[in-house]
Amino acid sequence: MISPSKYDKLKFIMASNNEFNLDSKEMAEAGINLGHKDSRWHPKIKPYLQGTKNGIHLIDLEKTKEKLTEALKFIEELILNNKVLLLVGTEVQAKDLVKEVGEECKLPYINERWLGGTFTNFQTIKKRIDYFNSLEKKREAGEFDRYTKKERAKIDEELKRLRVNFEGIRTLEALPDAILVLSMKKDDLAVKEARERGVKIIGIADTNVNPELADFPIPGNDGAVTSIQYILNKVKEVVLSKRTK
Image (cartoon, rainbow, N blue to C red; front, top):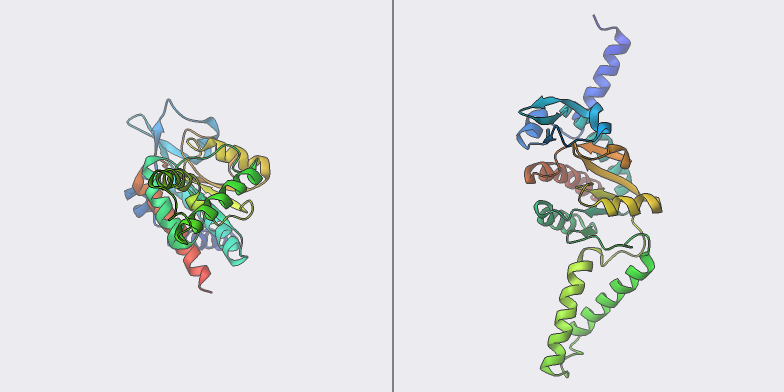
């Protein structure tokens, strides 16, 4: 029999896990529990593993729910305190989702590639962002109409390149308070620079990465669209609900 104190603690844990309507069945259907081959794993992910199946590591979804709850609570605090959360996801399967959620939630995002120095040399990056914004304003104001066709084409090409690199972070005035990294393996430079500059890291930790690199690791599959979408949808729900209050 469970003692009253242990029972209360168990109820608290269950309530916390259900606070954001996290459902193990839905998470399993999204493939969040599917890791990499058991030959490709990081030893520090072991506490979050449930076992293996057909040579694939399986992630313990109860642990995922626990850590995702912690991450979502942190995101709540960020939004309520008008802090900035930057979304980072440059994997092919994450790009469109990152842009969609970033624009809908009015969050800055990087979904093409992480430019070295984005955090560690932010002042230089900020100058490029300002230049991009300035160039776009001039074009919209018709300041390039008097230029030759060749000159306008050259400016359009430059704007295209700048848009790829800076469209999602064009509103950044300073380093963000935190980043959500959808693949800590692919965007390891983003993780490295965030750690160097003291930016809090929320990161999906697949079985082949060190979860300790993130302040708020979320054990889960970072390679499936459905897995990424499930987690991003939970983030979106939190951001939109807290922004309306």
